[in-house]
Image (cartoon, rainbow, N blue to C red; front, side, top):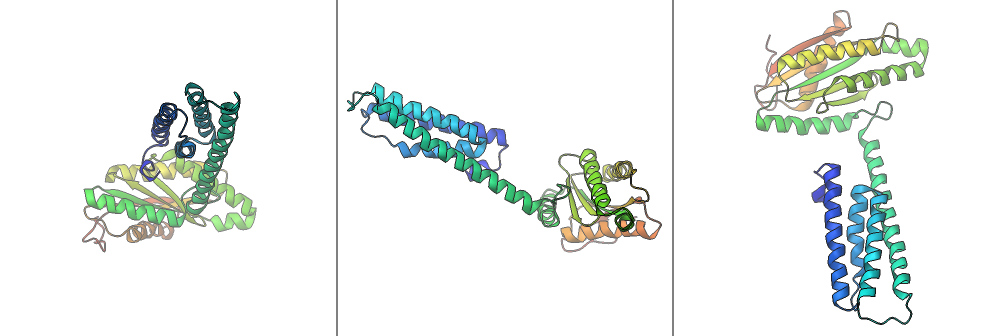
Length: 292
């Protein structure tokens, strides 16, 4: 199933269905042409698993039903004599039960693995990427951008006076503020952008393939959206650093650190604002001074 992993889910399911129908048809022809001497009944488990994995239990059960019907028809159309007329039907029902169980277990395992991946890569409160997943994805994006010479931007966002909100209104209010910020970021950014909650009230965003002007504009849009989202939380605002990179990029942690430094400059100058800076990498290991 690894060869399907890089395709969209719909394409995965369509390919799985096509392979399943071909396999069932071939097995039915083999069963009928050999006068029901060879069954290869267990072989149907493979297409059943494939469809259940890509489409879920309902799809897997439909394939299971088609396979069971195929076995019944192949037996009835063959010249083989059975001890009782109902034997092919009982065999078909037995196979349907077996295939259905396999489809259920396959779909259940897929759901379980998906949940485990979500827990390992997503922040439980906001649903955004967690720190570990963001760094892994960031390294991959930087490597791709370096290979093709594409620019990218990294944004670091930190909430102002967040501790005071927690101390005066409680952690429920703090959690609500974090969720509002996360929702605002999701609605504002492109589907190709990557958003993470690094921990506490710190957020980071990676914007692949974006020019300097668009990155600066994104920083302003984020600031406006977050300000609106935090309007119900008196005194809480956001300081945002936008670091844009072109040429040969440095390592991702260094790029994130550059955005963090820009954010800290906002903190020192009175909080609540956006600072955007372009960087040119002198080499793949470090960044040259900012271009003013």
